[in-house]
Image (tube, rainbow, N blue to C red):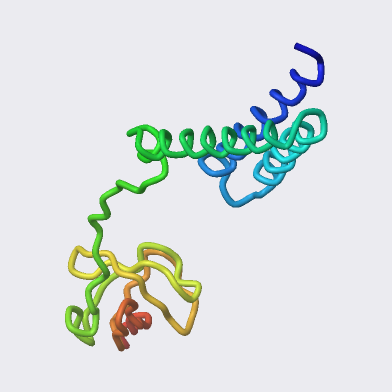
Amino acid sequence: MSIEDILIALLILMGIVMIIAEIFIIPGFGIAGIGGTVATVAGIVMVYCNYSPMAGHLTTAATLAVTGAAVTYVLTSKRGIGKMSLDTQIDSRAAADLTQTVAKGSRGVTRSRLNPMGKVEIDGKIYQAKCLTYLDAGTKVTVTDAETTTLVVEPLAAPEN
């Protein structure tokens, strides 16, 4: 076995490994896939140049078979496909339509600074709100309007003496 034989085997093996890495570990970037393809093709071309065309054909077929078998194995194994598939359950839901749940004129208090958006507490529940003026946390407010997910509030007028 000569140095060229070892180089050919390493090029093809390294190419297959880089192609599989591109598909399953670092998809979408391209460098490993391109490098793997170049290394594999270089190894096959070296076989065609140093040996007979029949040896080149056999090497090409064997390389495609090994690559296909490796990809099939990774896809059919639980670890391989499990890493590629999303199995997270999403149990959240969209916010309720505030135009139906909070009445105009409801009173509450700001829980964060409204600058112009922030949080208000009304009847023990926290809502997102906006105001035309800046309000500090702890300011008493009244609801003037309700959009789908945001309340429009203004500071509660101080009683006149």
